[in-house]
Image 1 (cartoon, helix red, strand yellow):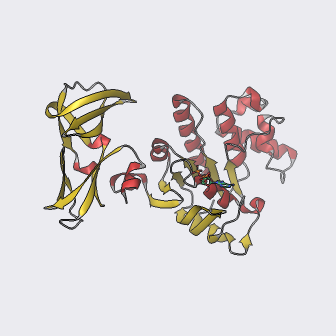
Image 2: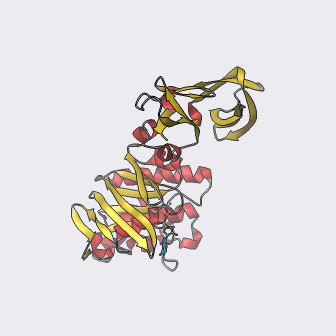
Amino acid sequence: MSSVQLSGVHRSYGKTRVLEDVSFTAPEGQVVALLGPSGSGKSTILRLIAGLEPLDAGEVSIGGERVSAAGVNVPTEARRVGMVFQDYSLFPHLTAGANVAFGLDKLGRAERDDASLKWLDRVGLKHRAHAYPHELSGGEQQRVALARALAPSPRAILLDEPFSGLDAVLRAELRDTTLATLAEARTTTLFVTHDAEDALQAADRLVILKAGRVLQEAAPRDAYDRPASLDAAAALGPVNVHEGLVTDGVIATPFGPVSASSLLNGAKAIAAVRAEALTLTPGAGARVLAVRPHGAHDLVRFEAGGVTWRALVPARTALGDTVSVAIQPAGAFAFSA
Ligand code: ADP
């Protein structure tokens, strides 16, 4: 295992800038989520690390060795990174066992078979060693792909949307088994996701991306509690926004003040309040417009003075037609406009 580092990476396709000055570090043995909407450049970053495409400027290092830079392009095989890409599916004509053994060509036959079974066992699929990919469920195929990627002891492992395309229960299960396997293997891991929940649940560190730029690189707790910008805050869940002037160190919103002590009085500013940082109690002040289930919560839309916000409150909280709203300061932020 090794750290993976990008510094000042640029990448364009023709005139389209896809990555702009991307820098971050995936520390040795940690799980790093690249989180961003579709088109933000996440898969391109993985392909650059894997050496599947060149960069235009900057550099990529694995374990302190420069593998991509001006005039440097270490071939994919020599980088020793494992990949679980959506389009990097299993070989259909090989059994699960043979798929996992595939990358172990330096070992003798018996050792290969042993190693293959050991890795299948780690992902809970030893009993399916003789099954062909089409005989396995989507989640099982992903687990075989993970075993195949880990078997040759790569320096780092790259996962592209590893948990997508599965239903919610399977998805959480696969996320947990994948993480347990990775933790046991202590392999540096980069995984791409557009799902904030997956990133927050699974990663030691987040790299939040938008339009080819890094918005924030931080531990999940820090990114959640201290977002670097409005976009970084919104990447981790629904936020309510209100623009106003800083007066006496706060921005007044229709639902209460938000502290803006780091901004100058009189400055134009944006208050951002996480939907889960709002408490609604029966009372007066705001009118409830809609209540919709949202996992273990209800998403409540409410309005006052023509401004509509959303709150995530524990499911089936009894609310009347009108509520009073309180803002929890820990989930409320101010950014200069
Ligand atoms: P993400 O993984 O975050 O969805 P990608 O890295 O796949 O983003 O793509 C980033 C941007 O680069 C997108 O706008 C996409 O259309 C563009 N792009 C990706 N690959 C190519 C390519 N081979 N040629 C041209 N444009 C591409």
